[in-house]
Length: 106
Image (tube, rainbow, N blue to C red; front, side, top):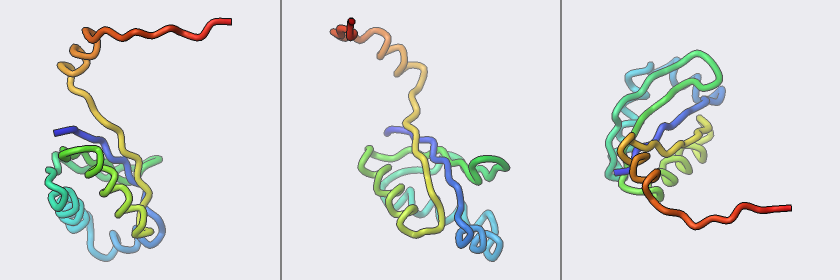
């Protein structure tokens, strides 16, 4: 299954929800969302900085990742950024794949 890093920034309403129910309740909600599309939550952390939370998830496909992102953003409680992650073995495969490419020239 494709693996994604999901970075989340909570809105004021989202932060109020976390203050009310706590971090473990939020992790359970994230896990439920990921499992509802056939995926698995590998880990979730809260953070101090540009993003408020990070999660690494395995989901069946890009459509499932997009569905999670759309649902979270539509809720108005958070904004997300999803990044596809590659294993070292997948990078090895990419390095060995031949690509025909001609760069632009002046």
